[in-house]
Length: 162
Image (cartoon, rainbow, N blue to C red; front, side, top):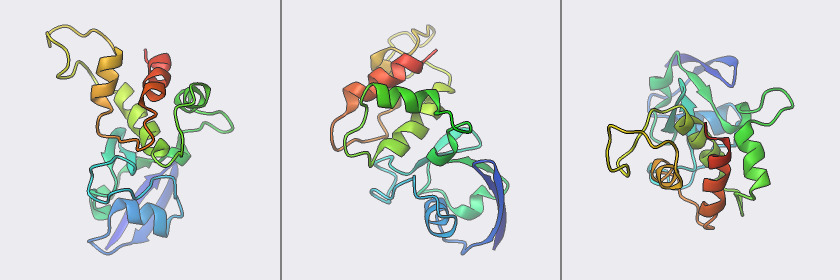
């Protein structure tokens, strides 16, 4: 099938097998290797990208389903030579160790900051307490870090959160 999508601001028209995942399209066909293939089952979040502004596990998204969509990967977070504020905060807070999960953590955090709150950890869902550390941990729970850099990840996100 032929699909057209915009990835990190550039339009791409590609022919794909209807069974190809968005992750495989990004890595194997477009050479964007930031999103990682961790579990390939949507359980670890290493492949998280933004599809039309919403975070998604690219290993579960079929490439054909993203026809006409705008995709942002970790490679597209920078504005020119300027790091995204979350990228700068991750560096400042040492929010990574091996770095394997970092692209997915960053894309997930960018998407999460644009989502309305509160989540299930808030006692009264009629009140939005803002992005407390508990709220950030809950919202980022789909992104695993095998090294255990969670404390620094939460600190980095909290610094950038509105």
